Image (cartoon, rainbow, N blue to C red; front, top):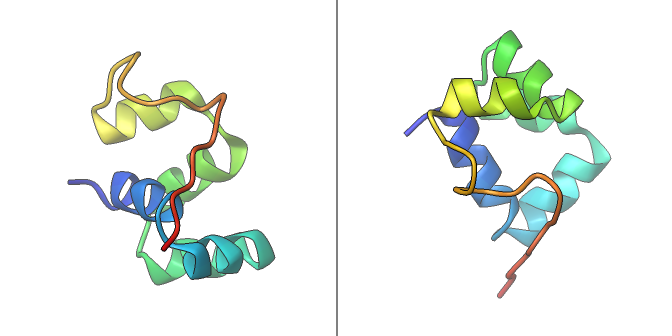
Length: 71
């Protein structure tokens, strides 16, 4: 699994990580070891780049809606 995909999944399930990302997204990106290209794609919400970098196809995830499930 790509580091970008791993971070995207964890942002949806880990409230503390999501809060950290909202406060300082660049710090979280660095903590997860994303490349400059992956970080830029995430920050810019660049759907085409995210698909290319993660290997996901249309319909496998949505960038238009956010579903969060926290313990």
